[in-house]
Image (cartoon, rainbow, N blue to C red; front, side):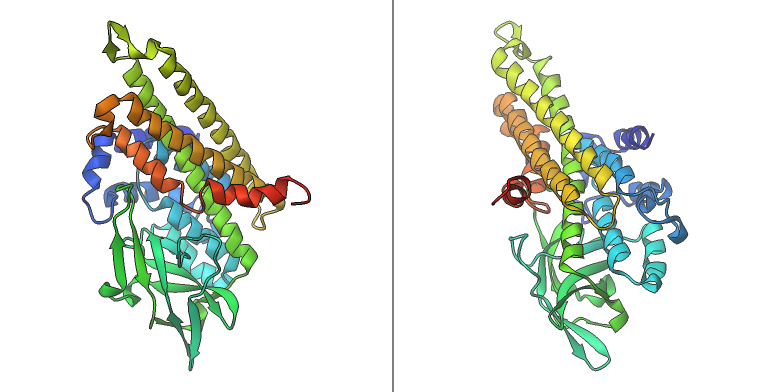
Length: 361
């Protein structure tokens, strides 16, 4: 039911012309559509009922994200969901009572965790005591939805221990945020210098390397779901073109050189979807086990590869027109190039999968 409702909502509110019209905007999404998504309860899906959510868990959010990917509907659903999970895993009861209802009501949070392009690197941003306060020293790169975020959860080291520090957007100066132009222009990210930001000790959440790792796996799963949806859209675009374009008196879809790769896309997409939903059934537990880690990593690998292949074929099959900016195939190949690096590309996850799947490595 959630899948059907979310798919219909995204279909009505996000066709390719709408997607293109939002590219020049500052936020990259429509605030009115975001408000409707909040009213539908999407922002509270993973939030327990006692904090104003529906408590349905990650498994119920996956079809929503997949539907958004299918129609390229851009909104800070994934970033806020990861922030929600960070607070649920690391926040005190008082902290959860304060912030989770805000997220359920549509406040936007995002995780700032990258300090270089290597996802596997540890946090080097430092939090130091300044009397009764805590001061941050360092910067983060490619923080998703930074321009729209009401608050940031910043991974840092405090007394040589991993923490998450909540920084509200009004604590940052304008010149500390450097917006970046992404290859997928439907999305937004920025580099942020948090140096000199001072917070109360209550804003520092105790974390562990395991909890940070679980958040990264969760991010990989959600972006895999979004990529799987985008792959389905790319496939629809390909099939529509192959069954309408005529060359040498025949529909080009009748040629085996185009039939077979299109079938390969379908197989790869279905495999990704199967792996994504399998991982979603395992990701309900707050403490991810080895099986959950394997499932999340496999889902991300397959979704990356499927969308990259679909995006590439969408461009190639449209011929010279496919290389122009006006062709919708460009939306999918750009999404593929961007999405593959969110929370780890295929090479990263295969590297970590090997010792989990093969003994004596």
